Image 1 (cartoon, rainbow, N blue to C red):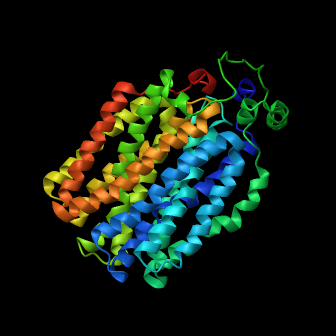
Image 2: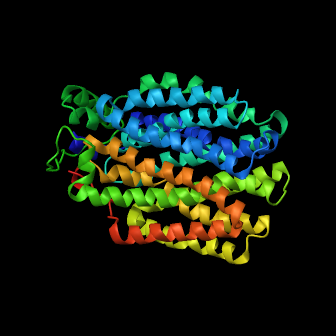
Image 3: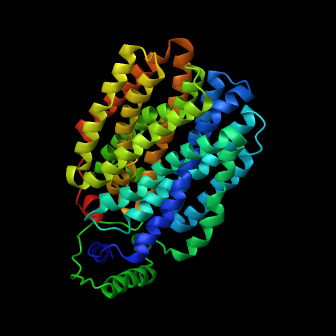
Length: 441
């Protein structure tokens, strides 16, 4: 089944499947960051201190940790599509609940539950899309899908700047209801992953789906070569213990460290910057939101460049360069004291853009490191460390800002990024241009 998929071009069904999942991922990104743009208003409306602010920002990421692990496990048992549908329904329903939050405690609870849904959607979607694509051009095809998450971050900034000053913070969560209205009907257009079906012995269903893709390719004028099977030692079933045995153990701990380091810094900055501009530098609300939006745009631009180039540069080399480059502007901020908002906008924005090329592409890399029988679980467990990093970042910022000052925040972020650089250099492997079953038997 893998050999037949490897020789296929991107068919119309695969193209639109990626786009439908991408639309859900857009709103996932929107939902994750919406609270950051609501916080400058909530801080004053509810009289929140730095510690409470950090906890509200972190609750969603803690929920995502649970969602990533649980739904990654569940997707290996019942399939990718059923899990995707439920996660979308969950994070949309909690958008409705957030509209009626009355204080810090209720917002923490709603964001935590919502995080369970958003945490499950992206790793399962990543495994699903990777399993449809051959090795040639896989990085570019997949990462152009992942850009939708970043566009969700930018969309949140645009919507926040347009709506919050007029309609208040509730407008952010009202817009988040849209995916439940639009996307659920498209679920019936999509088909289950044939690689997953084959791994469960459901060969007739897998054959039917791949045959439809082959027919679509030939109808579009493509001539298909004979399949060239890759010899593997694949097993039908697996469990979480296999992630920590053989050569998968090294891969697991390496990707966990990469997830944690990159997301602690990137999300620690992007979730706090609008509040930092508003509370520390006393900028107008519209300006604070604009500066946060510009930082997100910089991340999108850098990530699109990564999507177009990573199949040429390679995964490991790209990550090494980015991890070593990001600390430079962060150390400059620490040395200069981060005394002006423009200084923070330029240097923190540059560091964020560099690290964002890692954070958004690690779903590609994680899915390449594991076989079909545990791809969703491995990706989910790995992305659980991004949730730990993402929840640690805002809390760390709140503690450091309340005790020693903002410049030490950036110095700490630089040190964490350097740890990620060392781990990547010593332990990461290269995956570009290799068949999934060859990489992970």
